[in-house]
Length: 277
Ligand code: HEC
Image 1 (tube, rainbow, N blue to C red):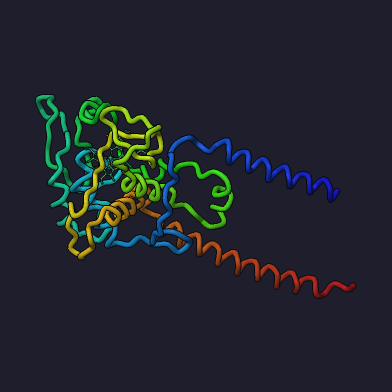
Image 2 (cartoon, rainbow, N blue to C red):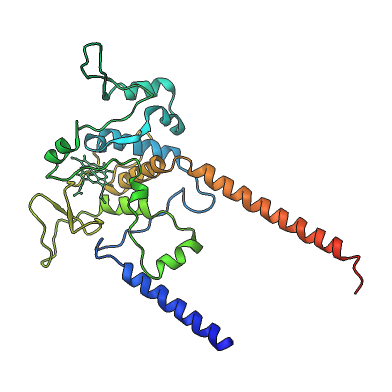
């Protein structure tokens, strides 16, 4: 019996290692670099100032190519903005509406009830402007891009409660452009070499961040690394705005279960105390 259990255990370990190896994809060439995030771990919370900086980077920069179709302007109240500030920001964007009484579609300034629109009228126009590649909607990108971690990380991740794969990937991508291309790598015309890109050696997005291109009221230095981190945190919020509530609920459930277990143990002792041995 003992021998069988030992054999089964060895087989399970071997299969886990093999599975890790089999899923280890060719790309990204470089694994995302793990960052420390305020929203990591069982008690993690978003850093509101960081999310505000991230929003600024998105609106001044990324929104020139990427939509956030699942984030309505009014959701920005979560980041501490007043209704007036939200209306003011929304009115800088135009959304298509209609048809009017003549059956024509028309453009109007966005309101708090609209989502961040795509700057392109359709996918074909977006591709035509970006070397044939489509700038994806960024609302859920922090969840959609989570490169497979391989062995042993994927076995350890649940114990470490590691779920920041997405923001680590976005951060690494934004800071991962390299001028020097290794000799054995062939970068197609019009693409940019980036060994952190999940689907190839190069991508159609030119490096979007440069030092000092944004200014922050709170005095945060606009290094590429700082900006990449802030915008990645912001995209984690767009993908999971209720992360904090989820973590708090998880904690409450654990406390409830602990108290419940203690009560069950005490009542079991009480009930069995009258049984004669
Ligand atoms: C000039 C247009 C442009 C701007 C500005 C831009 N992007 Fe992109 N982005 C693209 C294009 C095009 C792609 C698709 C690249 C491809 O698939 O080859 C892309 C892809 C991405 C991806 C997905 C990568 C993947 O794994 O598929 C992320 C994440 C991203 N951009 C984030 C950002 C962020 C954050 C900003 C602002 C700091 C930004 N982008 C600014 C054009 C842009």
